[in-house]
Length: 69
Image (cartoon, rainbow, N blue to C red):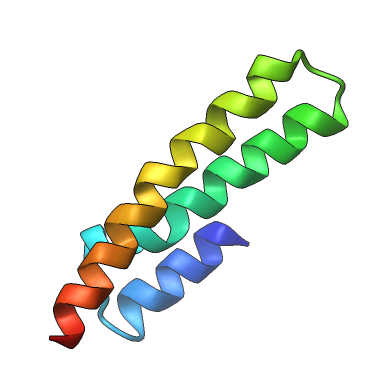
């Protein structure tokens, strides 16, 4: 579903690659963390993608705030 969303945003709405990475990157990492939790992986396999999603969220937020100004 994330791939379909990325293609739609890129082709239909003309989003740039950095905007797509900022929006869909954290979602993909959260899904990886969820998958790790569902298969019973060690805690750090769950925490690692969740922790890595935070900087992408913050970069996306900063870009959106800058674009509104």
